[in-house]
Image (cartoon, rainbow, N blue to C red; front, side, top):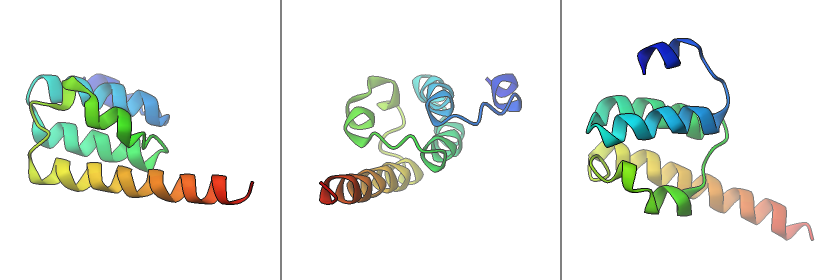
Length: 86
């Protein structure tokens, strides 16, 4: 997975794919680090993240909770902006 990171996918969904592999393996610090890259790159689908079983092994770690909260806020902000203009 480190080699995948070195390729610097740039796309938030690709970063998320790497993060969930770390999550599945219980690698909380690595999962959080890469999940932050996913969220910062525009993938902040909190409802999906909330149910993704691959994150379950690390979901309760403090840093993971912070990043998931960030994804929730970004998603709420996005919906507020997009749907308030209609």
